Length: 375
Image 1 (cartoon, rainbow, N blue to C red):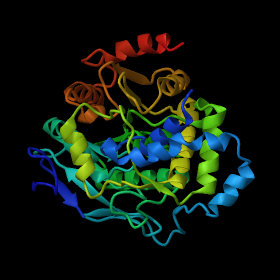
Image 2: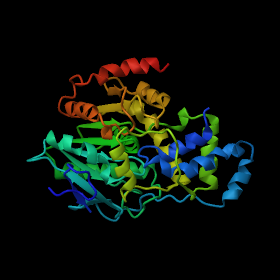
Image 3: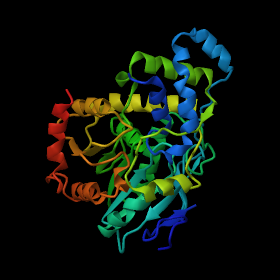
Image 4: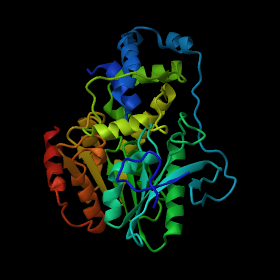
């Protein structure tokens, strides 16, 4: 195998192809896979001045914007979805490039892995070696609106993202009909897969792994957060923000954060209408929790500063009996890139091959105790 473009050394791959309202919105902008937090300073300063939104009439706020939300959902089907050695081609012709990390010999399991907000197909570089060493192949596509897709920077909508995930899963299943298929998603990617797993026609897969899934839906926001988000996304939908939020840490692995920052596929300017679209997706993911009846493993870290504990606890309480939850006290939002990533990665590998066995780290035993403490 060749070494992927920009991949860290040692990673073998192949590239194919009170809530303070201001801080809440800023977190939404960076939710899932934030680049180095210096780039969010401007947004932080801007939004610290937004208490004005609480007193201005919403009609005036909308008038100030003069913009219209610009979303880019899937178009009409023009052909059956297909796969090339470099990309998935969706039924409307949209091309989603992907990377593959292959094990030595025939894979025992194939994992279709979806990245988080503003990230790309490069998201799985750091955990990839551990998975391939276990005989697991990782296929990591750009999701629509991210990476190198032509819709880059524009939100596609929950229905479109779920449809894309379904089509890609069916293509991978057709390519590997006799190999077990797992769908894995990080943050935003996890939210997409929660919606897919709860849908009326989930694809034929052997399970889901949801790493820090984005479930901070409107049901877990207060009234000022909801109204403020509505005002911003309607008044200034095309406004793109960048800046920094101090003291927000997505991972303790500086190398991983620097890689994310310098990756040309990472999005550094986020539209407000994309933030609103992300909240719509998170709300749908939170609402989907009771309807997930596919085998799934949910992972959450005690040091996750991007998905509030109350939101994850709300989602976990709604899961049907039998779904597996794993809690890592020292895990950050990007736990599969953390310095201690071998612990959750080992649990994922164990669950993939032995889904009914206890997790090696004991994180599944820690989860109920953590959930009980959330009140």
